[in-house]
Image (cartoon, rainbow over all chains, first blue to last red):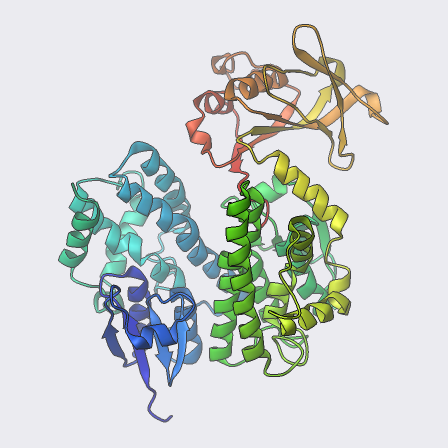
Length: 217
Length: 365
């Protein structure tokens, strides 16, 4: 195979960019990383993602792809060898896509709202409702949503594993209670200790400071 | 050809997301059983099949647990029947492009139609119409790029994006007529206009796109439930003479009988402000099923629930041995944009039984 040109445009603090990094690290793909300044977007970013002008943007041999979950699926598609990110079984693949979408559509927004409201009771209750679905999805002693290895669902929930904890620390609130969500709490620890994930996560202080600045008093 | 007993599709005629799945099933010549859902009163099967969103479409394949979300269903069907009319292209990059645009259409473009409906002011509507025009022009560009001079997004024949966008054509026509503004036109979107005509006359789409009457009925139902009403739906059988709902102040009620017989009961208001309903048309043994009612105030909805369930206060339901009311098995309570957990009175009433509560923010998805 000729040398691939693989580029990722992103921001260290973004959990969505992190998803792409994790997928690339899982597959052992070398890539060039470009840090964006969202107040001064690069010409490349605008060229490669004219519809949304957002990060992450992934460019493979000159062809751009945006939307983090689309990028992750693409990485799995384009680099067939190595660890599979989506299950092989068609039915399980559909289930994985469903849960990844759920994390994006319902779970993360509810959790973010709980954070933004400084742990207001109602917002936390709503976040708990969504997190409960995830708690129930961690079946029978499975380390990850993907079983023994991480898959698309685990990757989609990176925000919950890492960003949430940092937010809780920054604002002195608790959203993911261990007693209410024992499996999910265990999953968070397992997940952030995966090599591919460890290599992709930003330093915790950056995220803590971000939340302090954004929502702190 | 797949046996019809193997695949079941839960849906409703007016939902373009359901239509989307129906197109693909037709294109792939897959036989299936269609189960029509009344979204005002969702079946137990639907609620169990899609507890996260309680929406249609839901695909049930054999003994496997159900699959919701139309795009996920379409990809699943494409993967299990890859040789018959493949939907997604084989190249990973093209696939990524298709998925990106499907996401755009579903999350950015189509929701504008619903926003248009919900916006009352003229200026507001004009602003959204402008967004719709910009969106469709972007899709025109996309069509030109992806079709590469051919008839469809998918090339010579219908592909993934043709189905993803094509399912909205019924509603597009409806919105155009209803708002008197053109979405697809010869000047701004000439290629998409031609494409749309091809889709309308395509074998697989003809039967699945619902007619304007179906859409109008659905639209009127959405309009009625637009204000912050609380809707309750009680499934079961009720003795008509015993059926009383309290009508207070500005609340109003609609009643439906059964699932097949969606007829409105004629409410008549008694002196005390109670509604007692007499069935119309053919009713067997003076019983009606599935009562559906809407209220503006929580107290009125709660009063209706109490009457329907024979319950006075939550604490009346003390022991398991107590025979449950003959009336209802499942009550679905939905209201617009307000979390059920913020309605303490209803929550208290619902708690003794396993009740399922959902939003009626949008019916479709």
